[in-house]
Amino acid sequence: MKVFTQIVSKLHRWVAEWLRQGISPRRLALTLALGFAIGCFPVVGIPTAICALLALALRLNQPAIQAANYVVMPLQLLLIVPFVRLGGWLLDSGPYQAVKAVTLFHASPRELLSNLSGLVGHAMFAWLVIAIPAVALMTFALTSLLRHVPAFAAAEAAGD
Image (cartoon, rainbow, N blue to C red; front, side, top):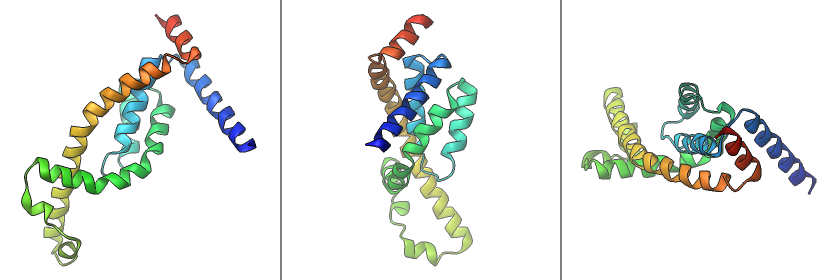
C-alpha cells in the first residue's frame, strides 16, 4: 500500500509540474498521443530522438512526450513483425513477405542490407498508416478525459 501511495504522490507532482508549465488539456493530450504513437515506431532506438526533436519543434512538454514514449516501449518490440507484415500486404510486395530468418543468415552483406531495408520500409509505411489516425483518435479521447480533471479544466479556463 505504501508503494501505491508513493506512486500516486509522484504522479500528482508530475501533473502539478505540467500544469505550472501552462499545458492545456488539448496540448497535453496531443503531447501524450504523439509520444505513444512515436514510441511504437518500428526501428529500435529512434523514437526517443524523434520525440525530443518533435517536442522542441512544436514546443511540447519534453518530459510528458518522453514518458509516453517510454511507457509504450515494450509495445514497440511486439509490433515490429506485425508492421512488417502489414506493410508488405499494403504494398503488395510478395518477395519481402517470404523472407525467412534462414535466408537472411545465408545472404551476402549486400543481399542482407537490401532485404532488411525493404522490411524496415514496409514496417515504417505500415506504422505511418496506423499512427496518423491513432494520434487523432488518442488526442480527441485524451482531451475529453483530461477536461474532466478539475486541475486541467481550471488551467484551460485560465488560458482561454
